[in-house]
Image 1: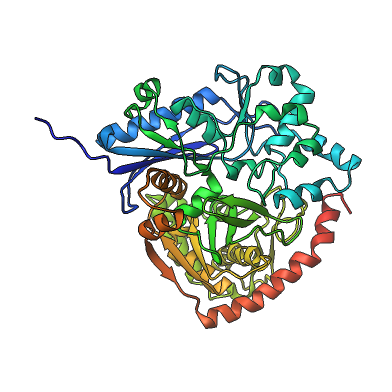
Image 2 (image 1 turned 30 degrees about the vertical axis):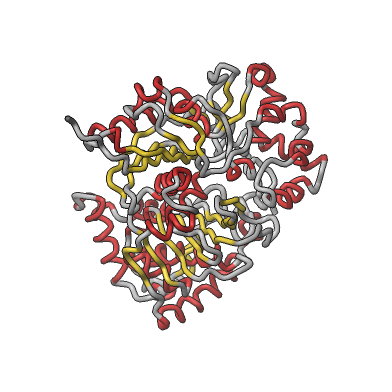
Length: 514
């Protein structure tokens, strides 16, 4: 007689913009295995960003199957599935559940002329959106995209029955059920106070007739449905496994990091930087800056964005570190070499200061200025390459301080994730620059972990998100601010703020906008 296998694992799936991650977690929250698979992003026209919905599902199914087979996990061990993914955009399906066009992604810019036109007709257009959603609306949010489709592809909308987001498309392919959770609906834009859709926002965009496209709302931790026989054949999962509704990638990542209590901050230091602070009530300060996410468990997440994070270090390496690149056998060896080089420069980089506004999009925190550009400041002929490299590390850390400085309440601590969190050198600089304890949790795939924890709550493993986090998030590294270093960075930050303020006219003049 063959003994039955206990269902003791949770599967978390995080469908990013260009990479799908599937990860397995045990009851202690340990990340046991991860599989990553790339998905294609298409740019049929400049500024457009699309992906084939069927390909996204095929890649997701293949990633799940590979996770189980390559790492030799029995499908019977999977107790539930949690989902997260890149947020908003337009993932449209017909009444039979087939895509009516390629998905338009969150980073698509085609709606800017439409938004400009709406602002010209209603000068307070963006402010009205912010007062409802708590977020500065991006061009790739769902409602402006639906309005664009109504004007430019009415035949597409005529065939559409449901407007989904990425994770909801995957949930449909797994279960045959359709819904959206509050973390997505509130930033379409929607109603941050009510954590859902907003009739006023539908009216503002002239989309009352398209309101039926938008599915019912379901709590992130609730069960969306159960794996169908067809999905089981494609993924290797058992038929009947419960699938949780899930949450957008930003709230899910915060949960995976353990940032669920008011006053806890988290920073996702990747290509972009997302600085977030958990709040007990929706926060609309500062006005017309940043983002606001509803979180499962009755919390909100205020977020400030810097659009150039590890990009700054990548750029410096590409331009000034060819020898180190050629000699390094692995990425880890390369970054260790660079940190030793930067360590040859003292705290404060001998007066060199780097403004990390390297993105062509400029800056969005503490104000929106697309003309903003990066600078090295304070250089003399005595400065070395080590000084400039250290200035890059420090400039990015000062931008993180900038993100938390405009929050209406102070962060007690900062939980750090993303590529930058792998560096103890950089993590310590961030602690010194911000004056906050910086905590790095165990694991690598925090979005997938947050999704898995939501599924665990839905299954009754934990009574709440807070309990799930308390029982599963382990801090593996902690960095405390050094008072002497913090004093140096306090002086640097004052100069940083002056440059940020006083260079704005020059940036605009250089861009022909003066």
